[in-house]
Length: 186
Image (tube, rainbow, N blue to C red; front, top):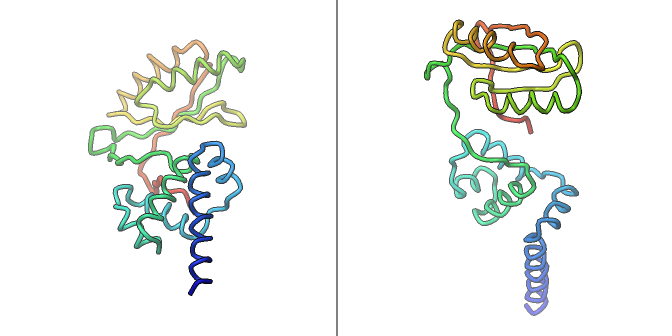
């Protein structure tokens, strides 16, 4: 019995030391860089991507872990930047933003200051849902939602094409949404 107690004390001591070390962000970053996600982490991430509102008890059941362990893991994943927030998804069509357009943009200049200015402009546009800097013939790919085609035309003609760094744009209207997910495959 004494041997078991010493082993238990040893494990507890190491665990407490580990938790104390993890409170330091630099140590946490170092730990998460070296750490490969295990099966419990992956189950937690899958569950949270499906429903970010699950309680720690429900998450623990899904992950096969204790609620306290789940809480610690989630906190570690947040601190490492793997988990970046919890949101509720809004159906764009049901709130009057049913026109979905993919817009390719070619820049006049590729100077860093011009790209930075354009990206700052995009950040102010709530109708621009996604913006990707691209390789190839086009410089950016944007996903834009609009109330109707006329609304998109106003954005294109009055805003986007009037931006001093935009040379040209090509628009592609989505006919229907075949697949949409925010869940990263794990």
